[in-house]
Amino acid sequence: MNTPTDPPTHNSSVQAPDHDRGGLFRTADGTSHLTTFLLVCCLFCLSGLCNGMIDVLNKHFQNTLHVSKAQSALVQGFWYGGYFLLALPAGLFARRYGYRGGILLGLTIITIGCVCFVPVTRIVGSQATVFSVFLLALALVACGFTFIETIANPYATVLGAPNAGVARINLAQSCNAVGWIFGPLLGGSFILSKTGEVNTSNASLYIPYLIVAGIVAVLIVAFVFAPVPELHVKDADLTVANGRIARPLIKERHLVWAIASQFLYCAAQTGIFSFFINYVKDPGSMPALPSGIAGWLPSNMKYLEGGAWHITEYCASAMLSLAFIFFTVGRFSGSALLRFAPAHRVLGIYAMCNVVLMLLIFLGLGWISVAALILSFFFMSIMYPTHFALAIHGLGERTKLGSSWMVTAVVGGAVMPMLMGWLADHSSMRVGFLMPLGCFVCIMLYGFGWQRLYRADVGVSRVPS
Image (cartoon, rainbow, N blue to C red):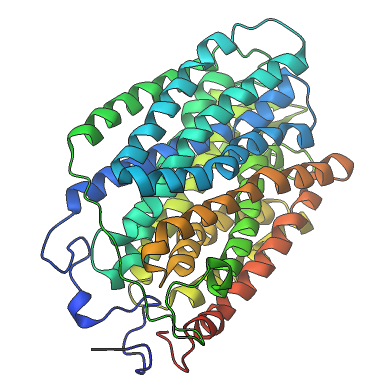
């Protein structure tokens, strides 16, 4: 049996004693939690679907309400702001009423928020008024997802052997990526233009949200009757000078710096996702379509102007879905990779790759930059769940509270994209990508430095690699 002072014998960044090991979905007592895990995966898929849908709203509101790029980033500001405001209350609610209670409350709030889109699309008023009401409806949906994110992430880490927690949360978050593939397609089908003329109406915006409300209703029924056991993890041997365990979370440096790094990751991810369509529709970034590719594309994805073929906004949303396919492949391959490779090193290497790709995007190299933008989704894929697993590792009974603090880091997605939009408004869209470039530099430093931080927290000379 390994102890914190033994040399590491496995490459996982989360190592467990032999008697704690089970299967990927089986705990030490022999109970299989595969059914529960699959239901949790459905929550992640739903979250990805709705997150993918909001990424087409930036360009849409720029067209229909004539807001600037920086102002359109308020979509993400209100969405992720809801996560920030309710993350800690959601964690406290889950501690009192359990995983099932928190999940059911979150799903109920999501349903109410989605139904609100029906009257919102019928409001007549100034552009500022209409935009504000849309933002409030989005914030309500986001509040429901706050409960889902706060609970589902740590829950995925305990539904099986502790030493497979990183792989399990990445596998669950892979379903989040699957949902993200279909989000832009669902939203884009109803609101983005399929010709050279832009869509200036919000009349059909409620339709995709009613579809989501129907999906959520089915999940509510499933979680009422499905097994949702209250599983807990043991406190790690985190000793301090006076020999006490479970010291204040503020002193867990591997958690505190994870929150900061996650803040920057959410900023980079949200900025890239939000302004993807702006970048590929920017005449200064997106080159004309080669005739061969134009001939292959359907008529609703291209239009002829000035003797050259260009992509429609609907095609841009389809390209975003293509990028999310790379994101999904990265999640599934990352789940397999993290069974064998140290999670913190994978995080550092992936962040370093994205630093290079953001630089290529900034340079404006035509199709090379477009390809770099799509490829960046692959290397972002494992970052959010891996941050989570590295942050809550060793927290024991404090896992739910630590998870709540990690969810507050999502506020990076509420604040920083407005900076990215401001840079784009005052210079160009490619200059805006300097913001995620700086974020990935900091994430790279956290990934490569995590082991040193965790070693300092547990107070031993060796920690699992």
